[in-house]
Structure formats: C-alpha cells, structure tokens
Amino acid sequence: MSDRVVVRIAQLAPVLGDVPTNLERMLSAARDAAANGVDLLVFPELALTGYALRDHVSEVAIPLDSAEMSALREASRGVSIAFGFVEETPDHRFFNSAAYLEDGEIVHVHRKVHLPTYGLFEEGRYFASGESVRAFETRFGRFAMLVCEDVWHLPIPYLAALDGAIALLVLSAGPTRGLDHEGHAKSSSAWERLLLTYASSLTMYVVYANRVGFDDGVEFWGGSEIVDPAGTVALKGRYHDPDQPTAPIDLDLVRRERIQTPLLRDERLPLVIAELARIQEKRRETLPGLSAEDRQRTESSAEERE
Amino acid sequence: MSATRVPPGVGVPALEPRTVRRILVSFLRHETQVAGLSRGVLGLSGGIDSAVVCHLAAEALGPENVTAVMMPADTSSPASLADAERVAADTGVQTRVVPIGEMAAGYLKHAPDASPLRRGNVFARCRMIVLYDVSAEVNGLVFGTSNKTELLLGYGTLFGDLASAINPIGDLYKTHVRALATELGVAETVRTKPPTADLWAGQSDEQELGATYDELDALLFRLIDERVGPDRLVAEGFDDAFVRSISRRVRVNQYTRRPPLIAKLTTRTIGPDFRYPRDGGGAKDRRLPPRAR
Image (cartoon, chains in turn blue, orange):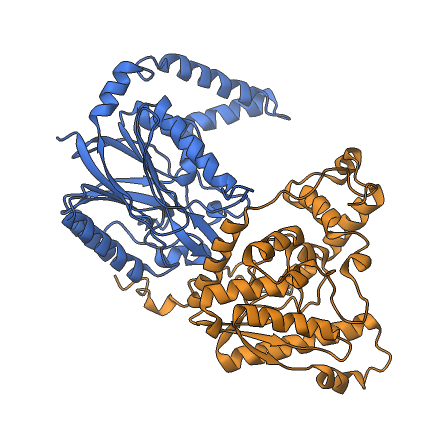
C-alpha cells in the first residue's frame, strides 16, 4: 500500500438524461486517467445521468448488475473510480447513489442519506433515502464516500471519520445560487468553508468533486478541490468550466496530522451516544398532544424499527 | 431615491457583473444547443433590457447567429429605433425592421374603443407573432428580455413580451441589468435614458409603476429574496402604502408567471404528475430503452 495516491477529479458537465453519452465520456476519462498515471478518478454526483432529472429518474436508473456498471467496472482495472448514478433496487426503489469501483469490482455503494427537498431541490420527491454510512477498504486505505447534501449534516462526515476513513470523497452537484458582489455564489463559499472545516476537524483528506454546466437553466459552479488534513487546499479546479484537476495526495499526512492534533483520538463516543439518547428521549416526551399511552406506543414502534 | 418610500441607504445588493456575464453567456449557448439549434432571435426595442440580451446573445452564439428584430408601432418614438440600430451596429448582429402598425391596425379597426392598455397589449402580441415567425424562418430560439422587476410586478403582456423560449435576464433586477449593461459596453444613450414601454409618447415606466426602479428593487429584494414580511418592512422605514401595493401587485400577478392551469382528471396530468425537465428531451432517443439491458 503506497501513501502516494494520484487523484484526478473529473469536473465535467453531464448531459441531462443521456446515459450513453455520459457513459462514453466517463469511459474515455477513465482510459485517459489510466494512461496518465492517475490512481483514483472521482466523478461528480449523478455523473451518469445529469441532476435535474425529475420524471427521468426511473428511466435512467440502472441496477448494480447493468451493462453500464459492467463497463465502468471493467474500466476500474486501470484506475479506481468513484461516480454518481441512479440506482434501481430489485424492489424498485430509486437511490441517488455513488459507487466505488476497483480492480473490476464494486467495492462500495453509498446511497445518499439526505435528499434536499427545498428551494430548487426536489430529491425527496423522486428518490428513496439511504439508510447507512460506512467507510470501506480500498487499495489505498480506508475511505468513505458521501453525496452532496449528506455533508451539510454534521453527523454524516463525523460517522465516516469514526468508522475509520482517512479520506472522504464527496460527490456533488452544487448549483450556483446567491451570487454576490465579488462574483462568488453564497453556495460555493459555504461549501468551501464546510469542506475545510471537516478536513481539519476530522483530520482527513476531503476530495470534493463538483460538476459544471447547466440543467434547465440551473448552473453548477465546479470549483472541485482537495483539502488536506491540515486544512490546506491542496488542489483546486476551475470555477464554472470543465476541468480535470489532478494531484498526488500523501496519505502519510493523515498519520502525522493525527499525531500532531489528535482530535479523533479524543472523541468521547460514550458521551455522544448517551447525550444523543437523552435528547431523543426528551424530544419524544415533548411531542405535543401525546397521552402517556400514545407515547408508549411511539416508543415501542421506534424499538421495533431498531 | 425617495426618502419617503424606502429607508435611506437601502438598495438591492450588487451582483458581480463579470461573473453574471459569464454565466448568462454560457446559459444562452447551452440552452440553445440543447434545443438542437444554433441561432437566437430577439426583439430589439432600443431599451436597456433588450440591448443587454442582444450583447449577451452576440457573445454567446456569434453575431452572425443572432437576429435582432426591430418592430416599431406608429406611436413608437423614432429615437427608440435609432437606439436599437445603434445596439445592433455595436454588436454586429443580423437585423431586420418589421413595423407592426398595419398588423395591429388590421385588428384594432374591429376594436375602435380599445383602451390604451388594450392597444398596448395588441402591439406586444403582434411583436410576439413576428418574433416566433422569424424564429421559425431562421431556425432559432426566441430570447426573452423581461427582467425580474417586471416579472414580479406583472409589468408585461402575457403571451406578448413575456413570451420567449429562454430568458437570460429574468433573475436580474433592473438595477442589476443596468450594472450588466455597463459591463457589456451597451451604448450610453441606451443605458441612461428613462425606461419606457414606448407605447405612446412620453410614457414612463417609473411614472406608471409609481416609484423608481431603485425603490422597487430595494423593496422587492427584501420582500422576495430575503422573505421579510410587510409589517417588518414598514417597521424598517419602508412606506406602508408602497409596501402594501407592491406586495399585492406581486401576488395578483402570479398567474402571469405560470403555465395555464389544467383541470385534473387522470392519474397523470401534465404539470402536477407529468414532470420532466426541458433539458434532456433531445437526448431521449439516445437513451437505452429501460428494459433492454
């Protein structure tokens, strides 16, 4: 296992609803990456399909054993690949998923847990939400993979780090909104602050792959980046335009940073779990209009779910 | 800015015009290409909004691929046509002049008592007919020229100047359009003259709307973008009657911003249940059939 991993972010503009074209471009990017010594190629969220799909969701969805997935798995013999797509399960649920492929195999699939459904976002209408966050072993070490909005909820990257990830891949379709007088979108500045905070407070590499281009008039701002565990932006893609920023990362830096600033060592998991349990209990108790009997029923059904 | 309607120093925050330009040029290029076309058509009035769209379109598609149509009515000011010609010359776009006087008169002789408002709407809809016909002739998309201030206030003619295929400036307040016009190098006479729908001599937007665009934009930004309620705005020093009348105006004109309502009968009604993006339609025949894998 080498500490040095050459990462490339494929900051492209997927064609909305056109899986064959997107697949062709992704395979060509994978061939190019393999030929140029790239170890890991990270595509954005829904790279295979485009983002603003609405009723296209069920039409562009693929099962894990599809021809498209096989083609990408084959490509992963030359370079490890992370990419976003619409996953259809055998029971016909549709997930906004990200797959990590390596040596011809699907190593891990993350199903987006937090589906934004507000403002211009409508994901909750079309997708089922994922129900787990797991780190996974890669040929470079233990990584985790999250999709866009997942990262806007503090516990999700936290769980990934506590599950042992030393690098977090964030696949995103971040739209430009709230442009300001300096030419930055409020959305992009907020993202950059967030990624920097996670990288330094969880002392891990954060690889952020954001798309560019337009879906139905909505523009995506690009600006993909890698932030190292010391909180330094180690690689930056162009804003608004296609790009393929490429750089080696040094996973030994995670070790050194965790010796220097052992924040994760000092995490108090029992305290967090106990306090969360207490807060959950308190929230149940304060549900308005619930009799003691109702409350008991709520609790037992919650236990059944667990 | 009137000290009575808007608290001092309050205005709509600026948007950095170089980035706005870059995004809007890419928008026009992308959405035209997604429609399977390479040309654009717009009505060039001599005003600042259509001048800005003309500059953006020329930059996005190349001036040879943009047709600017000047459509004076008999009552239009000759200065407007001169200003439009200036913008066309500055950008190098294709032009044509199609006076709509006869066309409008052909109908209006059947409506001799039509009010100035109705007559204005007839002019605006005649122009729409011309633009859509030219778009079919040159195989181009009609680019809209309505800004966010007008769209929110319903200050436009439904199926007239509000009709377009894509609109690059619909999320820019008039204040932003002015800043973008400077960035694009729109002729100074066009940038600095008082805004007018030019349906009759001496008509003025700001007179008709009862406030300046600076005031309107300051209020609309707080009300719409920042979601501040009317009571709070009055407490901040906005004029009460101004806040009430503009809020009401935005509300009652919602219908102008939506496609027609469809009576629902089936399980999949266009609109509420049949919901596709517009982009992506062209790609449809390139997709694998869903079950052919």
